[in-house]
Length: 329
Image (cartoon, rainbow, N blue to C red):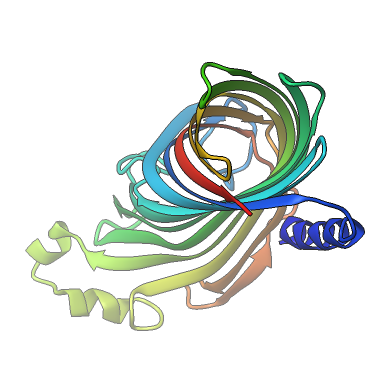
């Protein structure tokens, strides 16, 4: 949100300062086909149980989705400014089995958005340099389930569930070099390379619940589920905690891109582009880990985990194929 507010303020200042000068501005509408992947790796056996994945574990997820991209740009002499926003959604980013831990099943739905602000300066007819800001956010609604025998009571089988929302946000600044050249009167090609420094924040808000179910041994002994519940504090057999878990980290990314631009008219173009982004983030810092609920003894169970650590590193990669129409006013 801070970056988006910065975009608006920056454009207002630029527009005002150039009000008396001749400038060109345009709008664009595009469709992006995005293949997105994430790798979570924990190589530190000493980290706490609060970690996103267990120690000595690698978990990978991927999703493909389409997104509509809306852009606005202004050009003045060798200077260009642009803002682009894209939004899409997809199911099942992370694996359906043995995630987040062995023995668990997992489902998720995702709403992903990306916004970028770009300034470029044209050095000559072929070369340009660019710098900008980027924000990417993925909101995941997830449900994790498992069933496990009680370690202390053979009459109980526990059904565990985690259900909630995970927000993952990356923000960064990038520097790019762009080369373009003409193929024919109406066809151009371009290539670009960029380097980006980013922060990556993960916030999880979910309910962790345990439900006591009668084991087959208990039922075979002639008892019922109601009998089991009657022996447990609270007379429900259901115990839940509200969990808040937040991690902050940082890292870098490399970006490569290629594309073709076809000139329909002096004011209209179509661009077909390909771009690949590779992000690498270090193991971060657990900034928040709190819980509030009822224990199996039906006692208030509220607190926080101080000194929680994470050994999980994050790698993201994304391939973009984009078709964009632009009109210049």
